Amino acid sequence: MGMNIGSGGGSSADPEPMIEMNMTPLIDVMLVLIIMLIITIPIQNHAVNLNMPTSSPAKPLTEPTVITIDVDFDGTVLWNGVALSGGRGELEAKLREVAAQPDQPEVHLKPNKLVAYKSVAAVMASAQRLGVTKIGMIGNEQFIND
Image (tube, rainbow, N blue to C red):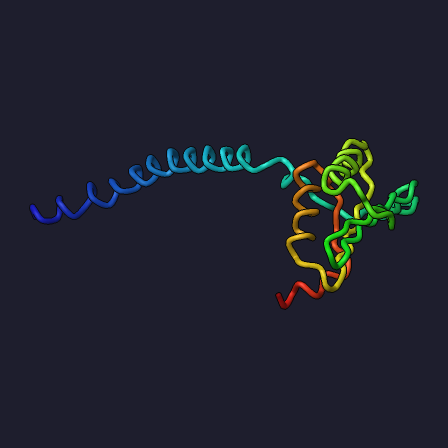
């Protein structure tokens, strides 16, 4: 009879309130963690790109200005087909002008097939340092196997 009291009423009713009590702080902690996670994610990741059908064409009203920078085989830089005699200083001045425009032109970098990669990398590095955002390489397949 003494055995019955121990295994009966008390032990089966006890764990249930314990579980109830333990869940609430756990949920609170989870909510706090989720909120912190949301706050710490950089804002641009919150944007959801929905491709909504628009009545107007998606193309910008003004065609983007395109600037072509050719890097010749000996490292000579041509800006829209004109060789820059002032060397790196002149190139950086022009890149600075591009970066200063509110609607930046697209810079297309066309390295010569024989040019050393460092000459091309130098132009890219200057552009990035001066804040040129729209820059792309054209015909850079020759560097893939380098």
